[in-house]
Length: 267
Figure 1: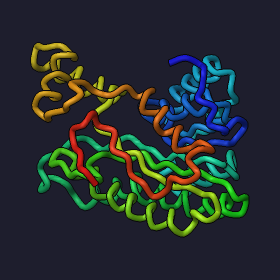
Figure 2 (figure 1 turned 90 degrees about the vertical axis):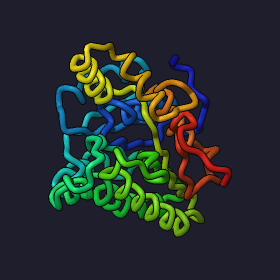
Figure 3 (figure 1 turned 90 degrees about the horizontal axis):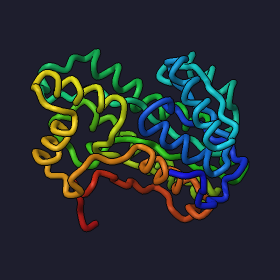
Figure 4 (figure 1 turned 120 degrees about the vertical axis):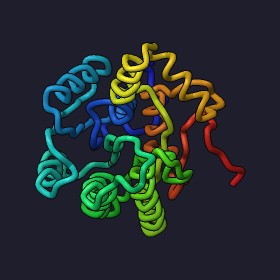
């Protein structure tokens, strides 16, 4: 991916990317920086966050600011609001919970912890940030969720339901603020190459005496992904950035699934 953007009209807009130190959040931060936005990236791991910000700044020449904070807590969100009080663009994102196909193994604490991260945190961020966007007459919000929010999967039983609730909430909110040029959308990924995927399938390869690529190919075959591969996190980030552009001013309340054709519908 080069440094030639698409001219989305967001140069010098202020973008807040939560959970942006790695994976698809990082891809979104990179794409927004390429477009000339000032990017504030939040994450809990200070070292990884600092490295990511330095890399994106060096690659793009954009202003990239690290904010070490846990967005799932009230204290963490206050730190974020102090660092970036009036963003024009909000990207909500978090690492997904581990795969589990055993619904009986999920405890009440598992549900509560996951709800705090994947549902309540984005809701609180929007509640705090969207009014300022409305007042200024311009704003873009993109929630990075999971394809399981729209197409439930047994291995995503802990991840899909809270994200489905977030989709419902954000679409309802999108209708309320669209007249103010504030657009809220969801991008719902399937399987992409990320650090967490590399860790999971690298461990499986070591356990099974195979390679990472062989484990990925097995998943692709078992789960019938027509594109016959996993997605690229940076390419995914470019899709997120499209929803943030000036040209996206007539697109709101939508939920785009990006999963290589694994799940689809005609409506």
